[in-house]
Amino acid sequence: MAMGKKRMSEILSLEYRALLESLGRLEKALARNSVISLQELVRAFEEHLLLHGRREEEALYPAMARHLPGHGEPLTRRRIKAREHGERLKELRCSIQLGHRGRFTYQGHLFVTLLRDHLLGANDFLLPLAGRLLSAVEWEQVRRSFESIGALSRPLAPEAAVSV
Image 1 (spheres, rainbow, N blue to C red):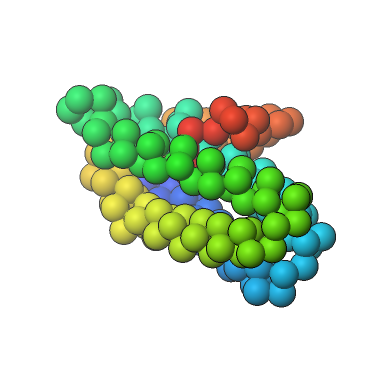
Image 2 (image 1 turned 90 degrees about the horizontal axis):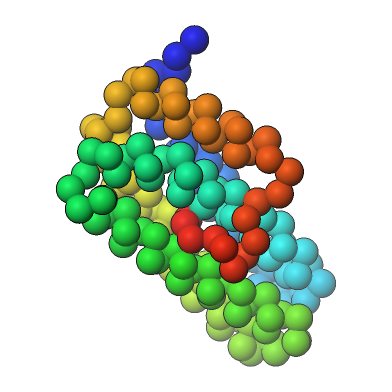
């Protein structure tokens, strides 16, 4: 049974909201300066973010790019930002592991702020654009791809993550 465009957009919006909630937990842990809890939160968040990025990169973006000139310039900008977020998260993880409190606190707050803006932009820009571009059949293909990607045993390695 095909899923409606509105329903798939709601699912994506829920995924962005879940990432934002995880980001909020990370932000609270930064305020507590607990290295052990931060390491665990960053590891779990990174896995969630990598899976999400892979879904966008392999399912949503290709479907949208077929409808956009120049291979989807708005998507290219989001991919570049996603790479930057991935690098910031990797730097944050390293600083936490090394115990550089001042550095990881600063990096963590910067990461949270920038990624929160990026995720909110997905709700304000990316999902409405996808809603205008994709047919119900294309949304169904995106949904099936999301499910198959989610069923895979491991997300992309952090160095290979290219989307958020």
